[in-house]
Length: 351
Image 1 (cartoon, one colour):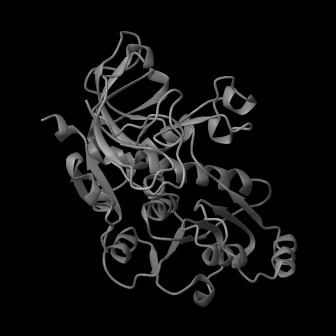
Image 2: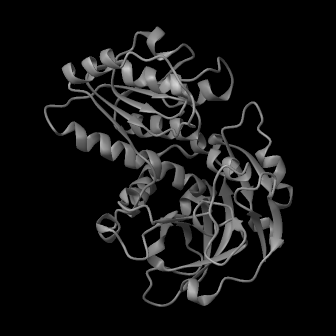
């Protein structure tokens, strides 16, 4: 079968290759890949910045944002042939830490977790793959190919869950949300904020085109100025860019008792002038919380299935701006001005 692969650490090593069919030892479910979504993580792996092969292999199959259809399912598995499923990206340690053993592998304590298409496990940008039933999440047939958006939705579902848990430390009645970045994660964070009945404001640099329209179509407010220049003081701030200057803006411009969630991953080596004393004073005197959030566990996957089912499918479909056949995968990584979410069609590879 055909797979999209890379040699981690080697820039420009991506290629299509034939590989063996998945072995039954890998899981009792056999799944046909339909589409995989791309994000910055995939680009960084292709650029040789990181990535880790499975033990005994010299290549890594890409693809962590995924959607597939069950081809084989054992009786009693809770799955049926034809079900739409998404493989859970992160898997717990071989000898689980306390968090992994409790099913919260997104909060792994010893760093020995694995991740499909990223770290130690082949990804799902291949025609077929296997998994055990507890390693996938089933979607409603009505979601269709929009199910490829489940994995990025899990990131913000976890972020929102953590925000709400922190908020319950004391009296909390949030009204205003600021989301920095109108990429897929930022737009999905905004969606979940709107679904909670909050006043959502999204900040991005572009002044026209699809992103502002997507935000306004949600019933949210779009800003092309900076968070400080806007004068907005939000109760919840979701930072979804990883841009150091924007991270500092989010940390410095919340309302009293604000909760700031950092979901964007910044590259190291960037130095900024920062008044740490003022930032500390503001956080302490304002009872503010700043925390980071990454990845998700099964609970967040299930929350995300509900969020997708409740979303306007027409709005969701506009997030997917390009679908590229597997054999033309380099086109998917060549960024276009109006790109939001680009996906690679795997199903067509075998036709």
